[in-house]
Image 1 (cartoon, rainbow, N blue to C red):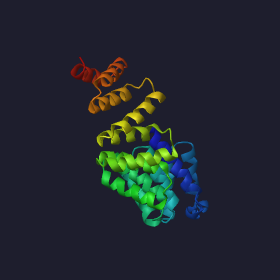
Image 2: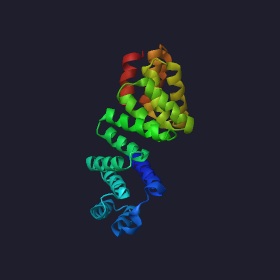
Image 3: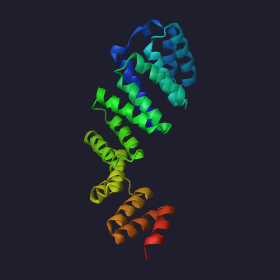
Image 4: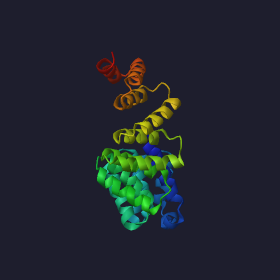
Amino acid sequence: MKSFKYIVFVFSVLFLLSSKYAVSQSDNMDYKLGMVKVLSNDNYEAIKYFGLAIKKDKDLVLAYYQRGVCYTKVGETEKAIQDFSVVIKKTPNNYQAYTNRGQLYYRTSEYRKAKEDFDKSISLKDDNAYTYLYRSNVSIKLRSYNDALKDADKVLSYLPSHKGAHKNAAISATELKKYKIALSHYDYLLVQSPDNANYYALRGKVYLKSGNNAAACKDFKQSSALGSGEAKFDMENNCK
C-alpha cells in the first residue's frame, strides 16, 4: 500500500506540473488551500477544500484529480474512482488518471476493468515502467501469464533491479513451465535478499517442478529455517 500511495503522489505531481491541465486553479482560493493541505498531508481537509473549489468551478479538472489522490490515500476507493472517472471524461488523454483508476480497480478485484485502464494508459504513454508493472500484476490475476511475463520484462528494461518485476517474471515463467527463466529471476532476488524465506520457498517449488528434488529440498530447508511454515510442510512431504 505504501508504494502505491507513493506512485499516486508522483502521478499527482506530474499532473500538477503538466501545463495542458493547468487551467483556472490559480484564481481559485479553495483549490490553493486544498493544495496547502495536501503538502501538509492533511488529506481530509484537502478533500473539503477541493470540494469547495469544484462547487465554484465544475470544470476544474485539477481539483477532481487532487481530490481523487486524497481519497485514495485515505482509503475512500469508490469516491476516488468517481473523481478519476470525471477527470478522464473531461481530459480523455490523461494517462495518469487511467493508471490511478486502474490501480483502484485492481484494489477492488475488478481486474478486467483495471487491465482496460492500464491498456489505455500505455496507449497514451508507452514508456511508463510502473504502468507495465501494474498490468503485469493484473495479468497474473487473470492467469494471462504470457502477457504478465512480457510486461515484467518491459519493466526490467527500464528498471533492471525492480524486485516486483523479477518476482512477476518468475511467477509467470513458472506457470508457463519456463523453469530456467523462473530460476534465474529467483536467483537474482535471493542475491538481493538472501534472508527472504518466501523466495527460497518459491524457488524450491520451481526446482521441484523441474525434477531437481535435491535443490528443492535444500531451498525448503533454508526457507523453513528462516521461519516459513509452508516450506516446512513442503519439506516434510517431498524430502526424505
